[in-house]
Length: 207
Ligand code: SF4
Image 1 (cartoon, rainbow, N blue to C red):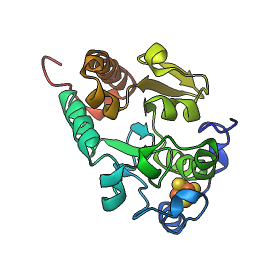
Image 2 (cartoon, rainbow, N blue to C red):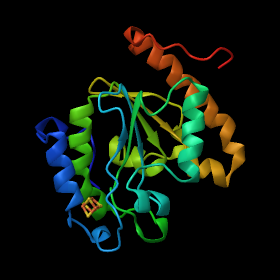
Image 3 (tube, rainbow, N blue to C red):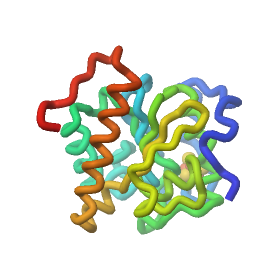
């Protein structure tokens, strides 16, 4: 696997309108065949924090918005617990079309779709990337990532702080992971306060 978000992103020169036009008509990989809607992204296009998941599920495919199903609702709750929401973050996925039966995207599908993610990254210019699950972490910074081993450990690549954590769908399947996920949210909160004091953002008390 040679795909990596941070490799070559500076060469991307899409504007938002062009990105949406290209992605909405994309047939760059086989995932285009069964999709209902292309799921590009949601949230604040100038956010300092970018959440990246794996790919759209059924609800996302129908609505064209990332993280709107059960896992998305859990993500919204986790954000709220540290005083964040979609007006302060940008949320997207490695692939923009739903893999059949929610399977993991293939390397070829991820590589075909990565230019869109690079364009989103170049436009948003986040200071922090949160990788939701192993697939995101593998394509963003390290193909050898194991999420149970590496979650919660910050990486800094090219000045971008990267935090791998569990995908919220994994938390729905295994509640015992929620404690670790909450620890990761607290680390995110602390890093955001450190890197973005100008945001005036204050964590909820008790968080
Ligand atoms: S997953 Fe990405 S590369 Fe594949 S068809 Fe959809 S937008 Fe194009």
